[in-house]
Image 1 (spheres, rainbow over the protein chains, first blue to last red):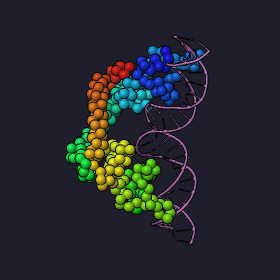
Image 2 (cartoon, protein in one colour; image 1 turned 90 degrees about the vertical axis):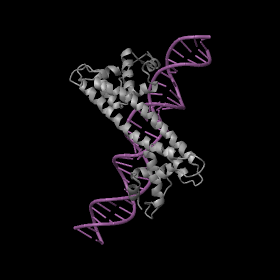
Image 3 (cartoon, chains in turn green, yellow, blue, orange; image 1 turned 180 degrees about the vertical axis):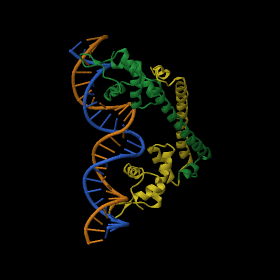
Image 4 (spheres, chains in turn green, orange, red, purple; image 1 turned 135 degrees about the horizontal axis):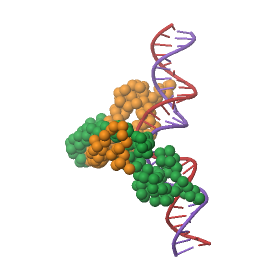
Length: 127
Length: 127
DNA sequence: CTTGACCCTCCAGTGACTGGAACCTTTATA
DNA sequence: TATAAAGGTTCCAGTCACTGGAGGGTCAAG
């Protein structure tokens, strides 16, 4: 299976797949005689795993750890749960931060007339 | 006023202030005989304005536009409002995205035993 | 046999800083 | 007055996670 096919199946851009190989996040595939990368189902499933993990917002380093756990038959689920819990806490922190921003910005937007005159509570607030 | 003082007053790191000058976001200050940057109140207030705008999540390019409007006596408040509304929409989009993620991840975290056995719904979901 | 669609590597750029080296100036102290 | 600490300067490199493009090789169809 060539890289385009693997890209389609995993949902990752070709460039990204090569990049992940470069940085050693996924291990290098076999090559055809012409030097083309050749993917099997296992490789594709690892790529898909990484894509999903990235979609959840795990960093590349965290994906590395998750992949290691994924392929470790003697893992403890607590290690996975810890990583996930850490990410969940990050998400919640970000949500709180965004909500504060949203409330403040939305009240400024509401207060601004948005006409052709220069008076502007938004600028006043930033100044 | 030297850069350390300006940094303290504006709430920006010194490095960042130099960087903003480098990219032309704020204009270069006067220099002392020794070549040290020399800030006045006006310069500090522009730096503070940029910091606040960045805190709201406006990009550097948006800060550039906001600064231009800030110092334009003939501005229309509608231009400012448009920028702020755009940013507000971004924030709301991000909030929705994070909420989807949170719900999914939190249900996975709850479902995972987090013990020393390998069974893990989180990994199953990523696979 | 040529065309177009693949594939490859390698280098550079993104955004918004941040760290560090190498060097100069000012200020406080012995 | 000598010196050391604490400031300032520039410039280059690194961060994160890709992404774009140049320049070149390979392969299947018409």
